Length: 142
Length: 142
Length: 142
Length: 142
Image (tube, rainbow over the protein chains, first blue to last red):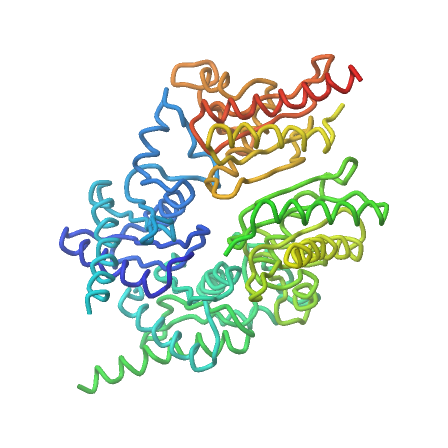
């Protein structure tokens, strides 16, 4: 079960809209259930270094089926997953990555957002997923 | 001088349309003038392995301001750029990557396409750039 | 649609049996449809360097939905995919990797075998897949 | 002196049984005395990101002949091995990796387990080794 490109494009559109509302410039990445890159967009003027971070956030969220920020609380000094970031070619464990689930709660992909504060990054990722859900709900009602 | 996300999205839309016409499923990557990834789309069912290739084609075309296929003719055994593929973290030198130039002939980015025969890959990349030029020309006439 | 661990173990068992028949010592790797490692076995005395090769063969076969040897004929000097091996973190394009397909012809994973001649490697990979098919056929007849 | 594939398979079988008892889905990796991968199994539904972690835990335990969790207590800020995780291509130093020793107490390999809490990961790794010891003891009594 994998996210489609059409779904990914809806998510990116929703995320971009939220980024504009927040007056930020974001990198937005979508990976499929196998953590392979599916879609990506860097808004004009967004930080270059945040492109790779957004992709790694999406991969991290998909690899562990968790919001990246949750992993980050577990990987602190003294925590149970200290330095988990060294695995899988380099993880990013601060907020901005969120798994995308279908109606049966199966992870079908993930979004990663980077370019502003981690709170903004997370809010934009959430808005992206919300845009997909709202749209899917509307379609079902028709 | 850099390509914008809006321009990149027009290019991807044009490339996707051509890919559908050719009955192919493509990975399409756009990099900016600094060879940094700007936009990416993998059409549903496109080869997973071609995602990375499309990105490398775009980077290669931008790094050397040449169609990737041209480099490939120079990198053969006995050729002047033999094994240039080992540089820059790994180049791809068969067709499908094309630099994107502005009206002053300055390279502002590049497109890389992968997923079918190299002839189809190149045709889809060309169609993407064409879509931008046609649209920009129309806009100027208005 | 992904291969299961139970299926992977049947494939490895079949491959090991064939390897013994051929008086060889093999590394045998199975990846899922997302090219993520699922199962692996190195027979006692098998070449250490062939472990990584077997995993890369499996990934390559899955990434491009082709036998690795087919890619290898296309990546020769003068061929259309010359030096494709530089993509995806390093491909292996000589024989020994084969995609695994379900009844609907969808790729659900791949096997990679390395440790002997490439002909033996391919034969052992084929025997692994055959073991799965035979067993699945028997189960259906019951 | 190296662990054999047959021993590795017994360990994996024992680890899988314990994982089922704990209602978890694990990635289980075995490396030989040279830290080279020998056998691997990802249970259906186990976290994708934990595959690489299980392999790194096995390598880490073998490289330093210590349980990974012990290293993790030494690698904390202010500790004697602070940031040792940066060595050897990336270590994992939380629990779940255990060296495997023969009757002369020589390290002949290591197991790494990942997919649940670190306590569960460690318990499953221990059960894997225990399965080998019990079986070897039984064989000697015969």
